[in-house]
Image 1 (cartoon, one colour):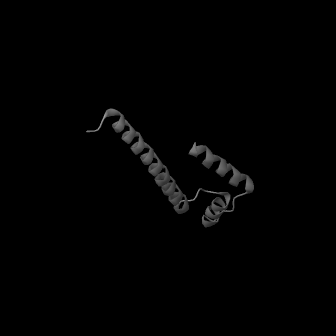
Image 2: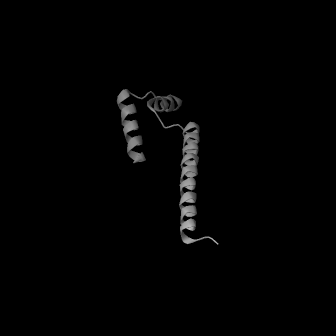
Image 3: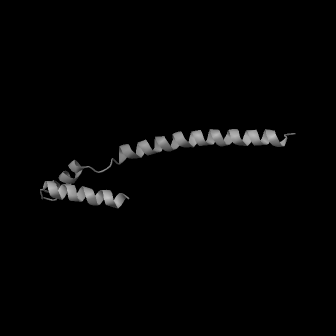
Length: 73
């Protein structure tokens, strides 16, 4: 028969182990997603402009980056 304090210790131990496993699992998943979908940068914006047949000025590139970063928040 399990007493109250033994059950509490088992519960706390399980919570700690679950938190550790969850942390490393989330970290692995987040890194994997960043590799598949890297954050947008200025070079990507310039490449998109070239694909559309345009050449963005440096001011336009900075403005687009500012808008993209504002949308993330």
